[in-house]
Image 1 (cartoon, rainbow, N blue to C red):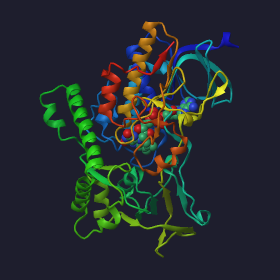
Image 2 (image 1 turned 30 degrees about the vertical axis):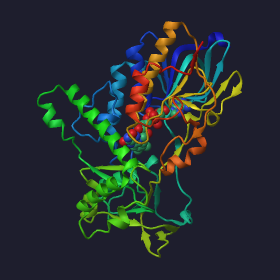
Image 3 (image 1 turned 90 degrees about the vertical axis):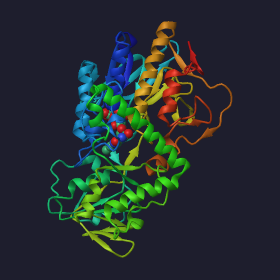
Length: 484
Ligand SMILES: Cc1cc2nc3c(=O)[nH]c(=O)nc-3n(C[C@H](O)[C@H](O)[C@H](O)COP(=O)(O)OP(=O)(O)OC[C@H]3O[C@@H](n4cnc5c(N)ncnc54)[C@H](O)[C@@H]3O)c2cc1C
């Protein structure tokens, strides 16, 4: 079988933001390696192609959410979905990746053979059910972190009785007409706070129905450093300066939220009070019962969501759903919300590793039983890295670092004539929670995530500056890796 099987040096799985960025870095630093990018869908872009709800945008600033090697030159710090998709595809064009991407190729399993020191990857063509195999030396898995086929929907009693339309933001119907309709958006996360301002001008009524409030930060749509710096610096320097400012600010705010949460809480709530005025019930609708960054903090550019509320085009209802009925939602308070359309913006269904079944010499690999090495490799699993971004900061900051580290690893293997590299635990280690983060989707994922150790390099840093130092400048950056 193996003789006719195609071979590549590096296989990247997934052509989303992380997969394309990683493949660009591979082309930049190791153009001599053969490369294939396998993508289950018919197009690239991942998240930024899949989600099509009105107003879709980043809630991270684009200076840190863009790739470090491709400056974000647009004026807006928060970008809409199409601009992000264009940016990803532009990067793919710049590095001539399209010739390496195989669309409709879903990786279902990967089998490592210790004798050959190679992976054999089984792929199912999603456009025809044909199955094929590809062999490779190294797999860089960039499959994202959620299920593309279904979102997370809590169980709601009586949902089938509802006569109106139910919509999930992950599957927004292209033709959905919400003009002059009564719309209820269930949820209080990034998606809900994006939908509210973008639908508010068209709907007859618009309610954001939340069980409990989320911290919402008002951020400037354009970075205040952009204009002054642009007067005397080239755009690439401007990008780098603002990127580092944002990185340090993000880290400072995150540390502050851990060490002095009360001050940060006061600051965020004062922002909301300023936006909504003294008569608005901020305590009920915008004051969470946890500290900032215990769950992901939402950002709204130039306070657009607050403007929709202030202008009476949208309202926030904080209550619990008792059940759905034919005309809408009956709340536990006894109130009723009538609706023509209900949007269930309650989040994502998490999935780890793109549903790929990994085996080593015939034995199944259970990721939940293994420790993670430097937030990217699995204990005892050769020649495999998984690119997963930050939850408390921009996703791409970590996926960029991961790709760079993998390039360094491949260079070292080439120089040393090694055919495999295996994260190998030396001594005992205790398990500690992977993320110090209570967001619903993170809590729901605890049973599917690999184990986090209590010491370096097996402990997840969750900090860009720490990772930057340890992955780029640390002389021991390959400690506890066994090269063969
Ligand atoms: C609406 C929305 C907004 C977001 N905004 C932000 C933000 O502002 N800031 C932030 O930091 N994060 C944000 N995130 C998180 C976001 O998912 C990441 O930032 C980023 O887009 C993930 O990129 P990725 O390439 O890792 O994964 P994805 O975008 O999910 O791409 C993964 C790709 O891998 C493919 N794939 C998966 N499994 C397989 C397989 N077995 N075989 C072949 N191909 C496979 C998928 O089809 C997909 O194309 C947001 C998420 C959502 C849903």
